[in-house]
Amino acid sequence: MASNYDFGEEEFQACCGSSKFAKEMVSASPFSSLEQAIAAARHIWFNQVDVSGWLEAFSAHPRIGGQVSKSSNQTSAQWSKGEQSTAMATATGSSLQELAEWNIQYQQKFGFVFLICASGRSTSEILAELKKRYPNRPIVEFEIAAQEQMKITELRLAKLFSTKQNTSSTRESHPPPDFARKVEDRVNVIGGHLGATSEASTGKTSQILTRTRPPITTHVLDVARGSPAAGIDVCLERWIGTQPRPLFGEGDVGGWALEGTSATDKDGRSGQLLSMVEAINPGIYRISFNTGKYFPAGFFPYVSIVFEIRESQKLEHFHVPLLLSPFSFSTYRGS
Image (cartoon, rainbow, N blue to C red):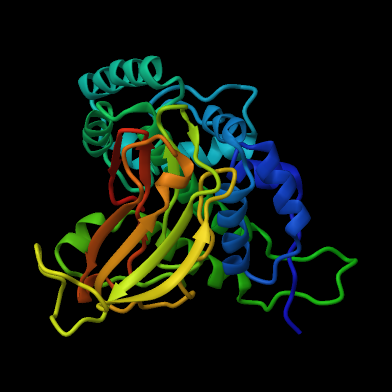
């Protein structure tokens, strides 16, 4: 019989500093596996935790290279120290000083601590990423920070499961003897996955995590109001025309096949647009937003974003957000 594993709010809050996140994770418990817990965590973080909850989670992190508050969750503080160990081991007095100065500038601009999954990253890598992200608009950086928080949460959930080597006397079943070893393997897989940017760029293949969300997702942010855009109809299509790809300046009637439709929720996130598959079909995709309904007096009756997924990218995740105002829009590839 498969075992179920329970944790309390304090343990979940060590993984993510949002009290709302911790409460919802307890409500979703017990979990039969780490994979199930991570899937629940992703859903809760991106769909149930609000802006104040995101900020609460961000504030639970110390500045990289800084001191951990004595009032911090002790488990979280210990994990933060471990996650920053590579950075601290590669730091010099001058690099720490520069990092501290940039951390202050970042927090003054955005209102929250610079957040990055620091596991396995050197001080120079972290500083380079901080400088790269500093010019971002606040609403863009807020989304990136939330994505980084989720990476940290996944890594910490794996650590949390690794500590659960024995069940309480009230349980009917016990984990197998090699449970701790298996979960430690999972920790290593997640850690390698989160720090695998350099390997991915050189074409190396590492262990692939089971997908916990559809391969294509989106959200819409109303940059005019500074809030999520709720109630926007969204549709996702894939190119199946006689040409290998739609050609600029030529008609494409009949060349697109509908993959899925949805509407954005109160957090600006769409529902599921694509089936939960491990490997997405490579090709040209188009995601369209009914912006005219949201901004009746706006300039755009609708917005379509066309992008390509290559054969080498079919196991990756594609987050294609829309940052919208009545007379402008922008997009980027998120994670």
